[in-house]
Length: 253
Image (cartoon, rainbow, N blue to C red; front, side, top):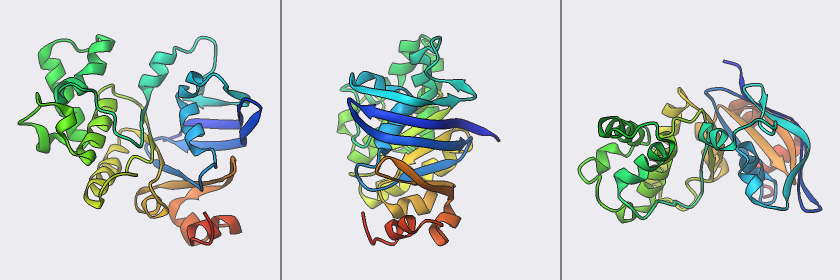
């Protein structure tokens, strides 16, 4: 497997304020990469830049460098942004189910894309997505009840299933377990370790322990700069930069 995403010399600004500085990062396919660091490190900005959600903020802009997805610049003039966001899906920290049924939450995207409107095909898509998100067994007998009736942890897995129903290639997760109990967190982590066989996963972890549990590779960012990146075990056991060591061991951040 090669690199799914390559970031080259990325500079990113909000208005006049630069928040990412000369970032170079290669993200291999079918791995879990956790990007961690203290608040204000630019991690959420980076995730939003990877599927151009940052375009929705008027003052946000890339001022240098580029982001390549399968070797193609995602800011090239001919890029279809809707298709890019299908290929690179995102799950946010706060669950955002639509105020409709569990089934319709999952079917919404495929229906909108007009790819799977036949009921049998939609049924198959819904079951597969919920299974991949480790939620099917809990909701299969109540698919037509309101999604808002689910617990917080179930709602977050529903949001993950909603992304998976669009058959993305990359999944971005911005602190997806930040408001969840340990059992729900464990279920999401178990799902991610299975999903990486099919998807490339980029995670802003809930905490440093989560990064250590499920990551293949980790990247430490500080004040918009990439300090260190590499295999999870190597970074956690023998970081090359003292600032990485200080953050991992809780001396700051």
